[in-house]
Length: 101
Image (cartoon, rainbow, N blue to C red; front, side):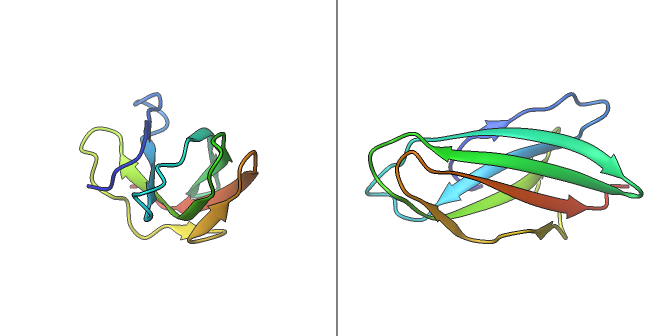
């Protein structure tokens, strides 16, 4: 399982967690995230606002969606951006779309 942070949801109506995984372990960036989850037709849409609150660059960040109960990855997921980097005090919003049965 990737390292990073888990952001829980209301299990009954929004069954996803956001996991971020950074690939440069030496720098240990300070990341914070907020999310908004909603249904659009038959898809779930997850908007993640990711911020680097530390002094160092957060390089090659990967976001994953995981089932809230099992923590297994949800696949397939279509992201608006894949690996991203954030300089200090930078914020970016990324959108994920997936079908959850």
